[in-house]
Amino acid sequence: MTSRVRAMKLAFSTLGVPGMPVPEVLALATAQGYHGVELRAHPEEPVHPGLSPAERARTATLFEEAGVEVLGVAGYARVAAPGADAPVLAEVRDLLRLAHDLGAPFVRVFPGGDPDRPRQESDAIAAGRLATAAEDAAALGVRILLETHDSHPTGAAAIRVLGPVGHRQVGALWDVMHTWLGGEQPADTYAALAPHLGYVQVKDIASAQDTAPLPLGSGVLPLTECVDVLCRRGWDGWLCWEYEKRWYGSAAPLAGLLGAGREHLLRLLDEAA
Image 1 (tube, helix red, strand yellow):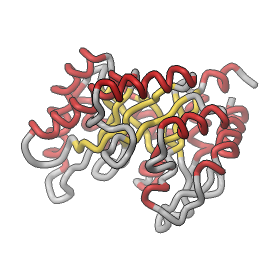
Image 2: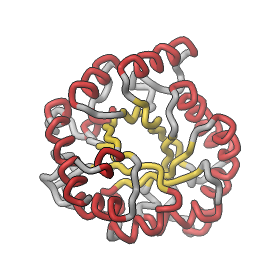
Image 3: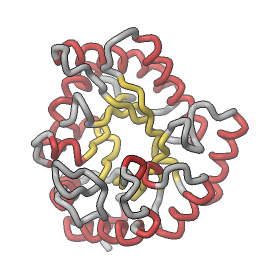
Image 4: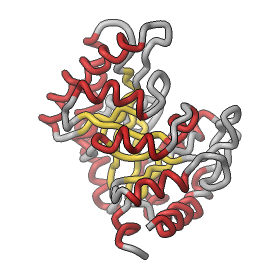
């Protein structure tokens, strides 16, 4: 196995195992050889901003004892949404404090812009809020990542926000499904996001019309091309499998797919390197 493959780290999101207690999540991660876990931060999950200091400390200890990293806290703040800044910034700050307490380097936020507003307006709202929150992120040693999603699904759209922010504590989360649905080629996404890229969410689906999660490598998403671009550019960050079981109850359980998914990613990395 090449050094480049060894440099890449693999994680999965708890979106694929909704409601699963942290000890069980960690047992899956260690049994299947994953380096980290992305925690969906929602009140219906075991880990969310409402946890007490003692609960946060206990969760962080469980991860440390298992030798598994908390890759990030996947929140639902929508930084381009219309309305007052204060509630959005409060939500982001709550996520930042949770990530800090858990030892996570990243917080995920969504764009969430209003499709009926001019895009320049949504861009400016998002950039202003992220620039403000960047100072809190810097103080806590956590990085805010804007996901390629909803109103800003591509790298080209995300960079319209990230460029004006221009702060090292604000970056990008590349969701390969949304950039593909947006018609953007992997090489173009990487070129736009490279200076800001925090990590990459991988997944697979049957088609643009059927986005139910599939095992990695069994759908249409350009995972080979994405991994090839990352390797050719010498990127050595995280690949996180976001299997959206929470939204698709009939999808196969993630637990039985994790081993094969890891092997598929390692094979892609090995071939690309």
